[in-house]
Length: 246
Image (tube, rainbow, N blue to C red):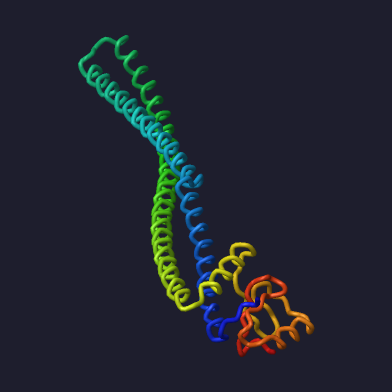
């Protein structure tokens, strides 16, 4: 025996349809947000920035040590020259004076060479420091952005979860107004075909987006207003409204 339900009550099923459609969209959005969160927790780009900043930190330590070593060598050479100058003042030995002059000249050449090396090392240090600082800024900025993105995603997931709770409550309230056999049919068709009801608008069934044939539309027109009809294309409950175009 065909099921009969008052047309106004049948139309109330569209509220449930809209709630279920929204809930499905929210579930997909939550799944996408959770996938994004997982990707953020294992983000290769952030790990690359961390690794590179550490590598350039080591390079910076090395060049700092090199600069300090050169500076120490220059200071030692200058101290030796100062020591030799003092010995020259007190020495009267020609051989010793000649040896001191040779040593001083050699030390001055060494200092000149070291100062050239120091200039190169300082330039390298500036370049390395610039790259290292840029990497640290990129790393920290990425981390801050990622943290903000993660927090926003978690807030969105929480809000969507709350909305799903509201949907369940609203859905239950509408179901309480409808005949049990009618809602049972809706749930069976939804479980079997993915959608339980279909809105007929201007001859198009919303469940599949298909325009029904003239023959199908004529069969629908011939049915009584309280007949519960099934969509010939989607097998969902077909809901007729003033927009059905019949």
